[in-house]
Image (tube, rainbow, N blue to C red; front, side):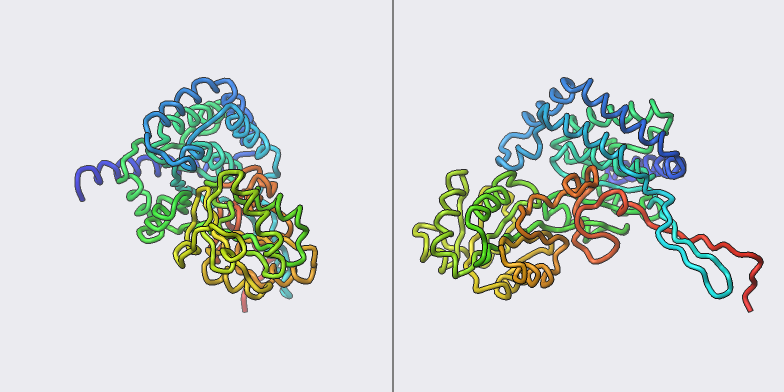
Length: 421
């Protein structure tokens, strides 16, 4: 191990051991203390808005050559800071997930068995570009009784530090240990490697970023990982779609924010409705600055569209580019999604309930929507207050990860003197 890696390992070891001590305290902290910390942190965000914006401006200026989508993810505004503050307050209003009785039953011998929710422990959060994740992840981890170590992208270091100061102020105000919410003490990539190797110190790694980051985490981690590799989302416009609704939803699903994982990357449109509706959808999206990669059937309907390759349909654009394909009914749409999708979020637009049920029942994806934008795949919109990320794996949690998904469980067994024969 080289000197840089050794230094990163020492820093991680110090941070993680402090986090474990803090986790033992916040796991048993009463709800009023956790809620007070979140509300005090929200007040600090508002009070320090100018300092946060200045730090964020320095981050943006220090990262030239950013794509439009990346710059959007990195940039904070007064509205986004207010949204962070409101997110903290909304998490404070949510029920405490710790200590809930998830199930209870009585055995024939009289033993009463209860399954009780408890925190996971220490969570390592590795994320890119979006500084607001600092507040969202910290709020959810604290409310669910976990400690968290946050390692944001090097491009957002100043922003994350300024936000963290507000979170630490909230912890101090509530008498909770500051080590419950930590940011990485170094921007060196070796610290990420140390987090991934920290089995026994970190209980769960949550990566949130591009495919490169998530792939590295999944390949190198010796700690359990909760992640999705890509957000390759589809919107399928069925033959029985309401045209006006379809135009509104498709424009929002693609262009509201192109750089988020819930943005639609592929439009599937039924062959029966494509000749009349596809030109209108293309016109709407083009007016919003969207470019296209289309299959032969779509290009035969709308002249001038760039041809799509196999790789285009397998690409998470995170930009104002949309792949387009014409399909023959629900089964064909599902086959396309299974071939190219990432099991993140898919939507169908239709007035035909049977078609909607067939589509939704045929999905393997974490989230399916009927007559709504894929950009609703979001913890805030699901009523979770915020989210720590989106999970597309098959174990523990799927879709937006909120408070309940940051808990595991244990069993309490209540007896009256029973012994096992």
